[in-house]
Length: 391
Image (cartoon, rainbow, N blue to C red; front, side, top):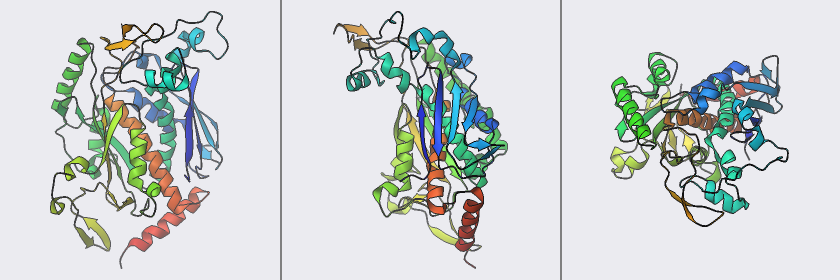
């Protein structure tokens, strides 16, 4: 059973996107600006499409907060779709006076065909509107609330782009240097592609531009790191309580994510154990590691090192030069449908993945330390931290 339950609703071109969170402790300082900051970060990034020029995502906190503090009751969030004004005749809830033209040529790589078959829909717009990555706006809003809770508990979460297409960021750095606020964190946030190496960023921008001119798209790899996580979150006692599994599911649920690794992940599979595992030492009464190849998780439980999650995003499935498809109405071969879309959304995916990591970590934190209020949660957390020190 989850301790922080949440869900989203809304379509890409519908009136609004909503998120509902249940289980947020009372007494958490929460303002709309805390959420709007992450909504704006999600909209940025070189390679985004025309939709981001229309939307100015801003949250309305509609329940669960009074006077700038959470009440312990469900928190309801709403983000208006400004583009709905251009789509009301095709996306409104009321019956249409004139039925809009149906989309019947599904895109390879998208949920269009599988969703139309599952839900018995003749118009794939009934599928793509909800399957669209626009839905992640609501996830980011929910994740921003979880981020506030984690920040009060001393945890910082940030993402950076490791690669776009064939190009990798050469700016390797200790996560403790670039995740908390500081000079390197500012460099990541100022980058149009969330990278540390400015020279690589320019090459990546050129690669994205070339893909755009070819009517194509690009994917990449994102790294999300949480610093300040206490050991002991998650559990090895049941399969569904292992935190690595919960994080992997959370990351894989993001649109276009096709692979996830914790720590060294795939690289560990080709190395010997002596080159994979992190030796343990005791320093100033605390257990420490010289390396963090495990990515902060052992046996499904956090070990106190930075939590490292990496995810691979495939190229976006909407192509301006579409692949072949089949018209659902006629059964004839036809080019796939084209929708207004991005060329590359890897930096935005990093912000979405931050939200998912924040939600999973906040749930695990509440699972271990409980408390209906922030005062109770922090008291329990402080007592636990004190007990970890070897005197």
